[in-house]
Amino acid sequence: MEERELGRTGFTITSVGLGTWAIGGGGWEFGWGPQDDERSVQAIRRAHEKGITWIDTAPAYGTGHAEEVVRTAISGLDPRPRIFTKVSLRWTPDRTITHSLKAGSIREEVEASRRRLGVDTIDLVQVHWPDPEDDIEEGWRTLADLKDRGVVRHIGVSNFDVAQMERVGRIAPVETLQPPYSLVHPEVEEEILPYARTHGIGVIAYSPMACGLLSGTMTAERVARFAPDDWRRRSSDFREPHLSRNLALARLLAEIGRRHRGRSAGEVAIAWTLANPAVTGAIVGARSAEQVDGFVGAMSLRLTPEDLEEIRAFRAENPPPA
Image: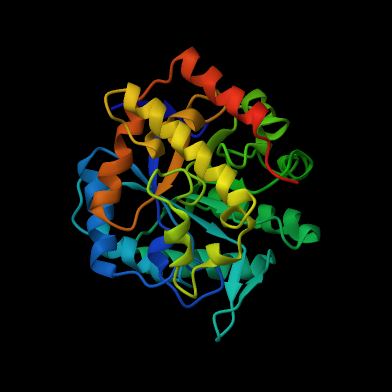
């Protein structure tokens, strides 16, 4: 099983980690609709069986529920997967998401995550969003203090741009970055990923299959059947004219996968993300053990120069609609 150095943390991780956004369930602003907890537990344990060594979660996923499911799933696992979680998103009693980077809020979130996850020390805590931007120094300073006290082992950021990483980096080194990165959203290629590589920042990219669009199992009919509380109903990526272009891209990835002994479109999409030398690992969500089986092969898939050129040509000839 391939493992990669996560920046300067001293951690080595598999090139794919399990994401838990969807297993938080529905009923909140960015939920994916109803989810069965037992299937979630099975997905996490299947990922462990397949050799995946880390789990990405966050308090906001299901307003605490994903972390609770992770605790159940990892109970008794040996070795225990590394657990990466986040801070900065809070919620109101009606499950509306709010933002805070105040010191007291950060400390409360970390303590709550430790309880929900059932761990004394969290392997990695990242700032989920740089919002409110005026408070990013206060939030980062607080995380650095928690690291110094041994409450968390490493600290990082998610969804930060270069200027924001520069600001907080003056307080304490940014150890990891979690950006969105996929063939649907490659924007971080231009400036953010080169910065991370130059500065030795470990990158764990999220949504390499673009929230299912590039899995090879998405269709317009399936999109139309999304649950009412599935946030993807509001996303332009899942609406025309973007949807047809994205599904055509998925068909190309499926064709490339067939040339690699029947790999899935999703595995090709993940392998493309992992081919960027700035990327340490890709976070791939799963809601069932079967979905884990469908993407785990991406860790051993190496795209050829011809594959990459075919994908590049598609992107050039089919830019995202304005």
